[in-house]
Image 1 (cartoon, rainbow, N blue to C red):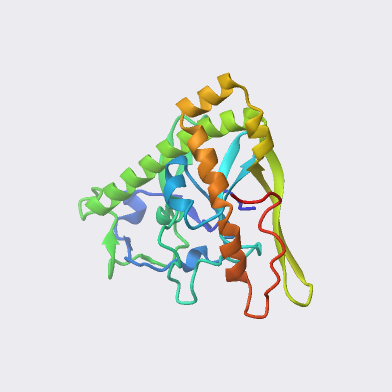
Image 2: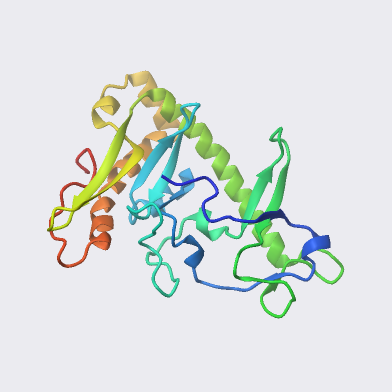
Length: 256
């Protein structure tokens, strides 16, 4: 599944000393994400994302479950970026919308620094076009302030998602899953390395744990996750041509 930094290549702290004359050209193109077959999803995005994407989970070394939206079956291809670079869905995940900005954490995790991917094609280093990052006096522009606020909000949602992911991991209701389909000639495509909630294990949770995940909204997220699995069928249809008519399975479990 997805690497954490995905399409970020040259992450550099934003500073007036280096970026005073830089600007970001406004664009609705997402070609930078064309090779991402999944991206992280925050808990606050589940309602919007569940209508269009399959939502699945990964488990880290600390057994924290982190949600992802699946964008394609091939490791280096997104099925949601059109040939002209536009996004082929109504909702664009926040991980993609915040690009080319990102926070970098200090070694102790106590300090966050706003960074920018200097490899982004939409950067103008000579102030010829786009939204400036700094004024002539070296102050942050309203555009940079808005992006800083957006990345701050994203970071807050990330922390909440991690907290919920720890609870989900500790519940021990996730199971390794896969999605696969086949063309008429029998050639199979498969996506592995992710987890889904087991309906049977969910049903076996006791009243105390059910009350806990109801109170912190995790139960709602679980149901949205299960609902979203039906979008694997849409993902398969995006992957196939008119000749690929044999759909073998959406996930290892039946979607709702």
